Image (tube, rainbow, N blue to C red):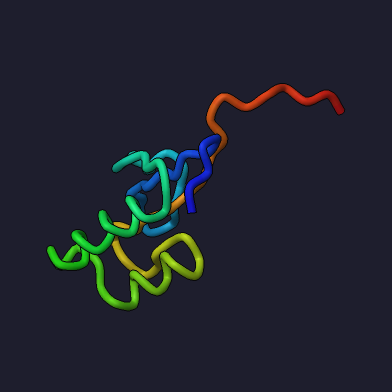
Length: 82
């Protein structure tokens, strides 16, 4: 589903998903583009079926030396008063 005000970010991280280890792999405009990229990673044996399931269900992989993390951020957010 496309959200024109959101960007989907894919990071590689260490085993603990620490912020200092995050390396941006790519920014995606919609889930379909991310899914295609992840499928190519799976075909290249960078991700397993279990990794794909973890990414789909939890937005991250676990139990690897190098893990992957998906986050969604707003593009050009409007300031809202509280």
